[in-house]
Length: 397
Ligand SMILES: *Cc1c(COP(=O)(O)O)cnc(C)c1O
Image 1 (cartoon, rainbow, N blue to C red):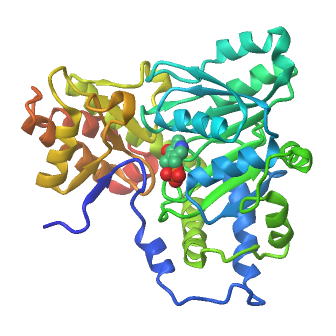
Image 2 (cartoon, helix red, strand yellow; image 1 turned 180 degrees about the horizontal axis):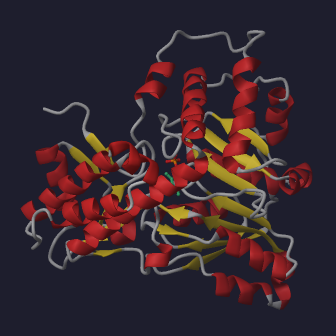
């Protein structure tokens, strides 16, 4: 009946109407003299979004995974030692990519539900062979488990050890949703993808590279071509690309950046935090737990809900899909069957997320989870009412 389905997966996310309409246009000349009037401000405004003044933006017609490869191959050489903490499907796949590309990969297997282990990094950097570590890879928001990492904390530890490793951050499900400060946190390579916080279709990825990363790219020996920074930089400086850019996505990006700027990025972060907290309260009211082991590390963009023993989380996802036209994320890999995921990132407000909480609740009831109907929705409503932004509350009087 309902078309399209209600989408509460952690990417692709809902696309605002304004963005969708901006992409519905005729093909245009990618070498037109006025094409840079579109592209140059995109580079500028993406830098602002990443909170970087000194970094350089690269835009690729790929999904986020391509930007992982771009960051690695442009700045490292085969055999380089990299550290990657793996605590969910995405950080685990990034580690696999490091092995595929021929890096000496120290994959730290962390229990799923936990976060990047700062103490372990501190200890590792104190070891005699630590000088050989060329990069530390951090997944800021592990989308499989709903866990966030402390990127600023990683920078503090690198600085305290006076260690020159590049800090690479997968921000695909966090940038444009939760706090991210490229320059202040000394991030060397920050990665975003279009279909999450940027509220666009899949197909654009973004890398912001620090001066240090750009310097590393001059001597890095990894083979690269499609994603080569130098090739892109040469064309980008005049507002063009080395090969055909995805023009409709760029037109959509223009509007999504405008929407984020109109709200103000700090307000966007606050909104994600507030909507996420409502979801967490709902989960608690259902008597269930999140996959995130502790409240301090819970992600503001996705919540992985652990289902009771004897229940298959895939059933809940299927029930929501078939009976209620609603998509939730399934449990991936190690947590398949044990968790389902509620995505709460991108173009959402209280009413939309409450409908997602309601859909989860009704599907949980249908699948035999023993909970009081309305308990989760009620807990979220109470929280949203208590924390209604003051200006909105005043306008409603
Ligand atoms: C979605 C996601 C990816 C993969 O991005 P694709 O666009 O699917 O290639 C990588 N890392 C994280 C944290 C993600 O959420």
